[in-house]
Length: 324
Image 1 (cartoon, rainbow, N blue to C red):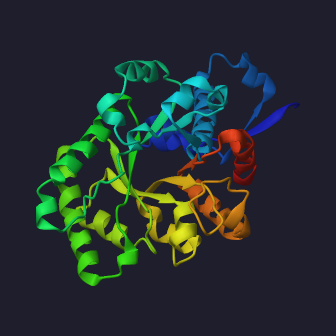
Image 2 (image 1 turned 180 degrees about the horizontal axis):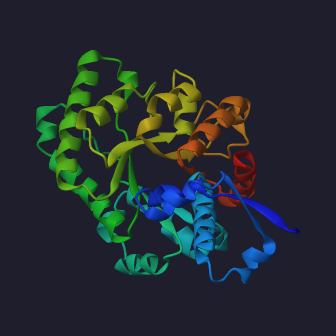
């Protein structure tokens, strides 16, 4: 017999455990050999085997897709609308709410436009500049409602464009190095985010490292609040610049809370947001490859977070090869 092809029928059978069909087919040898002639339809009267084989193929495709890491790019709405390079990405990180004043003056036509572009998925940057959810100063806490208002505005924007996640940069400043400041910031942050999460349970909200030496306080906040839609994002460039532990150790400590990685590099002196092929990240290539390997297993998003977008297409192709 020619054109033989082997198919394992047991994977799709798990969906039919209680049926008489399964009890019968479980008696069949583990590999079912079917000729190409049969596959082409010469056994049209017996569609059951063809159906099960189709399920097996669909399941294989689904599993393959499930394990794929999505590569996206960070940009402003203006860049997104004007440059064709973004058509080569399916995941877009919209940065505008991070810009001071944007949420008070944005054009509602932007929302309409984004909602028409259904071929993309979106992650949004939340408001950050001059906000401090973790302030422990009593008089300043009286105006924390302004910070809360900006955070809620950011979340509302993200929901209106059907974003899958909104990421807020941490406001923690470790350089102060005073215990009462650190503990005050930590406890105030827990109170603040608990209030936000009481009102919002539909969109993924993530805190992202900025100046942190390590992820300890961010982990503490997430574990204390313990909500399914509240987690962490990992900014590798920030960890390279200010972190006191390796980027691989950082990743491993936050992996179970992680949905998205912001990917960029620097020279160790400034937050340059340059290509991952340059600077400190290039020097830590082995650690970086291990992070990619682990991130792919968990289907974690990778966002190219560059100031200069000229290399994003080339870098995307390099990432795809590294992930292959």
